[in-house]
Image 1 (cartoon, rainbow, N blue to C red):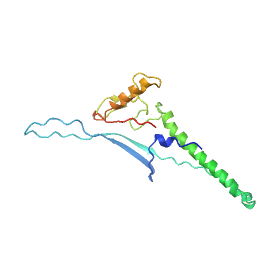
Image 2: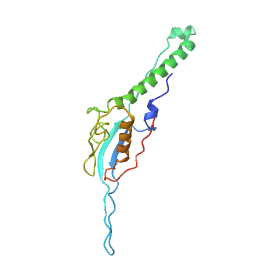
Image 3: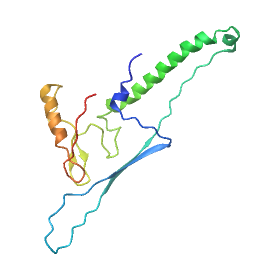
Length: 170
């Protein structure tokens, strides 16, 4: 049996809800200088996009016949079928996890911001767009990875403040 690869990519959390909902709430812009005696400047957090994610229920079962029980074959078949069922469930989870990456460029599979996961134009609430693609597409190489690491370190939040993203190997 192969190790579960999808768990290395996704942060798994348990939930008892029928769906999950994300609402993008921004922080604040940069602070401004206040002169003596002047009033403080106020800022408001902004609400961006919202997205609802519906949980999928996956299921598969097997049955053992009355004759298998009468012939005392259920133990050997049950153990074999249980292992096969576990493999089927693991395979399904791998396929569902891979589908998110496989459809990462597809406009038919958009996130809360209305664009695909791998997109050069993720809208920013504070104005403009951000890309998670290299400006010049490149094959996987040391140079391309270095360019991507630089791009990750230059990322900004929705109020255009630098954020400290750290790349993670899996």
